[in-house]
Structure formats: C-alpha cells, structure tokens
Image 1 (cartoon, rainbow, N blue to C red):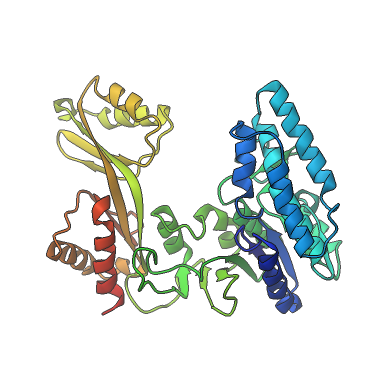
Image 2 (cartoon, one colour; image 1 turned 180 degrees about the vertical axis):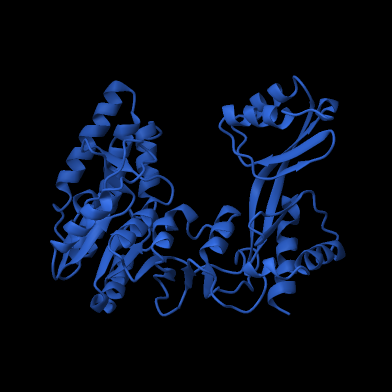
Length: 433
C-alpha cells in the first residue's frame, strides 16, 4: 500500500482534480489510500468567517464548490448537507458574537470534508470516508490536536474493511474521544498522510504539491536552483526550519519512525522524480545539500555589566521570552552582552520594556537568517571557510554565526537587503562549480 496526499493547489479546481484522478489511476496497482486537503484558499476563507472578518454568508464558499461540481459533472446537491450545517454554525457565531476553538475546528473541517467528498465521488471505484471514520483520533487540544496511540490499530481495522476500493479521505482533521472534530494544526494534511502511512505500514508516502520536490535553494531568488533527488530526514528538517516550505518536519515523524520514505512530487509534472526523504542519510555526491533562508527576523541586543560572573542571567532573559510565548532562533553571547533573534514582533514592545529594567536594549529589524545544510558538513571542515570567503569577496557582512549541534548546518545572520546576493554567490560556489 502507498499513501498519496494531494495539497490545496493540487485539488484547487476541476482541471487539477482531473490530473489527480489520472495520477491515482496510474498507481492503482499499488493500492493507494488518497488523502486530500481543502481546495486552495478555502481554509483561509473559513478562518476569516470564524473571525468575523467577512459576513457569515457562505455564498463564496458555496459557489467555489458548486463550480467544481458542475465542471466535473457531479450533482449540484452533493454537498447540500455540508452547506446547511456550515450555515447554521456561522449563524450561531454571528448571534453569540464569539467562536470557541472547538467550533472553529468544526468550521475549518468543511474545507477537507467538501473536497474529499467531491473527489471520492468523482473517482471511479472509490469511496469517500472521513479520516475520523477511518479511526484517526486525537486529544481535545483544538487547533493543534495530538493523535492518540489507539489510532493505529483502529485505522488498520477500518481500512481492511474496505476492499477493492480506493479510499479518499480527509487530511488535517480528526475527532476526539467525545466525537468533536479536531484539527492537527500546521502541516495537518501532511501529518495525516504520515499517520496513515505509519499505521498501515505503507511502502511509500507521496506528498503531491505544485513544486518538483525540494530545491537547492529558493528558485524565486536563484533561477538556477536545482531539484534534490534524495535527502535525509535530518537534512529536510533543518531546511524546513530555516525557510524551505515544501514539508514541515513534524509531519514526517510517524513515517520516519517506521522507516517509510516520503516523496515530494509535482501534480503538474508527474513524471518528475521529485525528492525522496529517507530516515537515514542516502549516499550522494556533494558536501552541501541546499541553502535555505528566512526573512523577517528581528535582532535584540541586550547589554548589561550585571552579566559578569553571574549565574542565572540568561535564565532571566529567556523567562521573559517564554512568558510572552515568543520563540528565539539564534543566540550569541559575550562577557556583557547577548544578541538573539525572533521572527514574531507581536510582543516585542512588552519584551523590550521588561528587558530594559535590568539592561540596555537595542532592536534591529529586517534581518535574514541563512542556513547551509548537508550531511557532508560533518566531515568537510573546509565549508565554513569557503562560505565566509565568498561572502567577504562580495562585501556581504555577517552578523551572527551558528554551527548547529547536529553538525549538518551552518547558519548566519545578514541584512534582508543582502539575501538575494548572498544566495546567488553561495549557490554558484557549491552547485555550479
């Protein structure tokens, strides 16, 4: 068995769904279980409806799905039950002027429920079964639910009961033990695919999207970026953390625990081999696998003579960030100063105010973190010298440097305005020699 997950852009309209049908049909002999996301943009629209940013009328949501039904030759009444339930929920929110996390999860579920029902009815010899009816259960942490251990056994039993049918199911959503619909949070549909793959001991998990796998760097910044055929889970995780958005590492954990390869493929170019992520390092040529970057970082510089020979000073700093639920990316320390980066300025002013009670603080915005990633960095100690030599030659100053504990990435901070130049010269150094 294989798991085939299709993202929002892959099922964004009738034309794309027809492509998905052809792709699934071509792999029917491998006994696929199909996991689908909501139509592209629908989850965002439903989020707006929950927050009151738009009128509670579902006309736009309804029209989008009715258009797909019409173009696929399906009955316009197929989703009447879902439309009616969604309308009633939104009317309730409008009357109460509030939306609980539980209600929000239920509303967000309509994206996947509608797309999966459409695709399950369009495919030949297929069956639409929501993920929760296939045994996927979570706790009641609405918005970011955690799967329960008994899900694996329940999934196995449920899937075995459907013979000779291609099951089309929902990504992103599940149910808690009380029967409430929950969502799995960021990367939820990929996570669903990984969970189903692990439960069913799949031979492969395919993530179909709108790009041909993971690239050596951002092709929007460097047109000469090349696709990567194979990489380790550790490499993929580092790249995702530092800006590559193809797949979130947490979503791959169930697959990696069962040693199931994950392939990232392009729905619009199905013949392309894409990228395969393995648990262990595949043997490939080249020390550096890819260069990732993430813009929008903020540097906070903290200076205080109280740091000299004092224990607990760093704990005091990080307690402030913890209390404001703000993650820290990079940290650099000296005798009397600490510099660190964050990527969320929601609580910046409050954090700075508290830090200023015992130190001098300065803030620098519009910074970028860049990470050179590759298993080969463990053995090749010339890579750092090459990186900083090239940056120096092109007069690109570096602020902070971190050689990760994993020893497979070297990250550094620079101004956002220098990002494209740095990516271009480093990519040329490591991939176009």
